[in-house]
Image 1 (cartoon, rainbow, N blue to C red):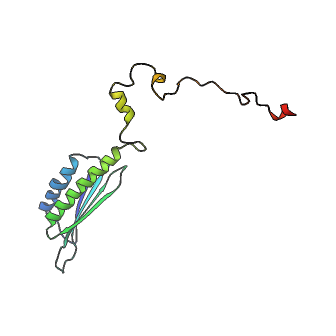
Image 2: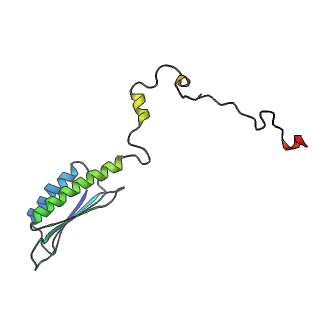
Length: 155
């Protein structure tokens, strides 16, 4: 996974870069590690001169074949905003991976597979089951069956 850690309007120390590697990248690599994926970690100072919640963290995860996940979090401490945003990213990524693993156009529960797993159809032919239709080829019916006369025959 390609990892980009950068600061916006502030310089990042090696301590916060290592913290991001340990608490976000390592946690994410435990269950998703693709060489084509890209994780961008941006830490910045939102309101430099004003007070309040001003250390913000933007996490962007681009996964091939899936949606791009973007998480933003603001707190007074850059480490805390990185922790909260990292937890949210991991939850969103697990949810997206589960969505990717589900087959498209099929239901999650397949009752026929349950019947087969339990031993299948009871002994005998399928035609012997109640409300069963024969599986063989159906006899062809003629279009003029039953003695109905056509227009030419009436004239």
